[in-house]
Amino acid sequence: MLRMRTTIALLIVGLAGVSTVRAATRTDAGETAHATSLLTAERRAHEAAERLRLPDHAPARWKQGGAGWTPAWKPEAKRTPTER
Image (tube, rainbow, N blue to C red):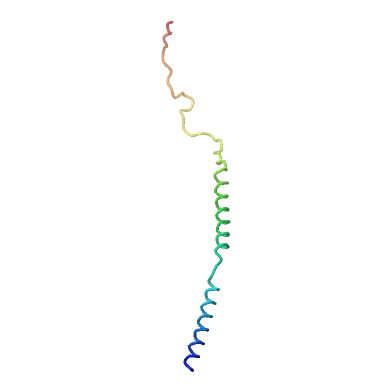
């Protein structure tokens, strides 16, 4: 009789312990998915805003290089008139 009481007591304590652990580690799937979808929506909205933003234009400035005052092309010595 003592053995049976001990077995039943251990069974009850074990089941209570298992249910306590399961309750502590369980997460609501709906709540987690909702938070994840909000974070995903926020990230996608930020990415869309970045795509819609116009790129910064380069400031106007003097372009280095070139030939100075002499033209880069050489004019022809004489041009012949075109005949009609």
